[in-house]
Length: 138
Ligand SMILES: [Zn+2]
Image (cartoon, rainbow, N blue to C red):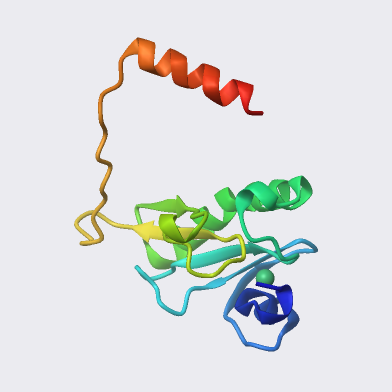
């Protein structure tokens, strides 16, 4: 997908309106129009990049520098007790808009959103072999 067809690039350009909660030279944050909870916010780089692994390091740094403050401000505004930061890469992971984005999802006790973390076990040998494979592909 080119930037011209990208819904988030259209939001950056002002062609599609948004409820902006933060903007800087490199970063835009706005309320998700399909919120999982009150205050659900999307944080994006202004320059188009499809996935985190193709995002310019300066844009990654600019986004990372704002996530904590945004999470704090959003939680204060909606009286949430905590928040998730969720970032998907590729359709298989749940990425719908192919422009890098971070979700800030305010959370409250018993909010019904749930959370699946189906941890498995791995042996020390398996983890060691995997570490070697990852390190040789860099
Ligand atoms: Zn885009």
